[in-house]
Length: 103
Image (tube, rainbow, N blue to C red; front, side):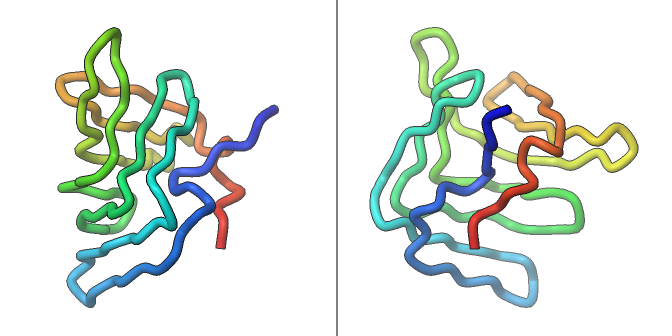
């Protein structure tokens, strides 16, 4: 099975505040093919909380012919699924597909 990561492996730096606000700087923009094509801007930001990321900026997913913003990510520990919110859509993936997170 192909490994997937929530964050690409070209991270240059990151900051995380005590309130959960974060910024990730990538070496360059990039595209990742999941079930949909996903675009990562050079700067990604959002708010981290237990089991979720909200107010995401800098990630977009291609749905049909449109690029829609990924606005949030939530983990359901009971079902073992990670849910991505893209515009009016959401999509779930098994969390085990994201276990190999780059450091």
